[in-house]
Length: 341
Image (cartoon, rainbow, N blue to C red; front, side, top):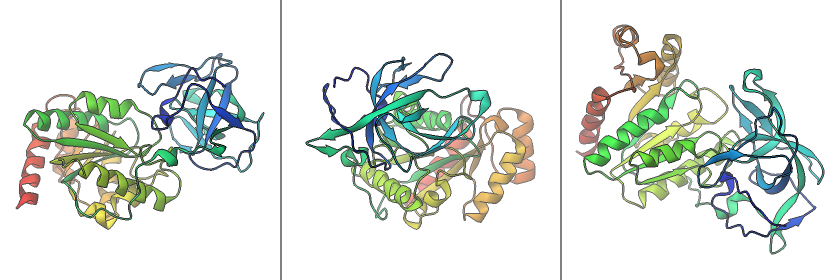
């Protein structure tokens, strides 16, 4: 069978134009299957290509897709089916090519497209999994450049915006800066924005063979350790690590950030919050996890009122990420200097 459209979730898999398809399917995380797009009218049918371009999945299109989990509060939630055979129907859970059974739909987000399963992709008679083309997992991080952990109270709250501004500043000051997207669901738009703003290298959990990080916590930790280890092979001066989704949730953010071999390399913690209640909750939760928030940003800090309230009542520096970020940069430069002593 010939492929004309390739989604970004299989970006690291060397697929040829013509692929073999097997009828026997054993559902597992990361398995690559072939699906046919069903009715696209009124459905969320955006397709993210391996180049990062956002296009459309049209009824009748045949594309590779990957089985995985998703737990988005604002969009779709899905699971890997326990059994699967050609002819079964699944849902297009994310633009990147993630598919699975539907668990929940945020009605304001619309309805996901259905796809029909055609079979499992084969290479020399064996099924393909994105884990087969992944970087090695690690049990811990032995040594690392200073890490800035950029977290949030929920998705779409300004994490990537902050990372991009830090990347631009430190790149322009001669540092080798690399980026990591350690949690979330497969989607290349954030990593591409990071690269556009000066990050020399950006890696995410898909590079470690995970379609999302809302599966097994130990797997997510080992994948994160693998990503950080791989980045350090390039001898960066600084690593900007974005944690997709919120501190609380099913994407294993807390499990990864508190892993001792990762935590010890974090020199600064930035949290993006949408409102004051979220900022208060973030302070409480991060304290429970053994962290001090070094900077609060995001919509809560986009006005003088928010910044003043946070700094006066929470005792945490706050700064909008919509323009220049001199306070954030000054704090990070100080912490990097202290870490180098």
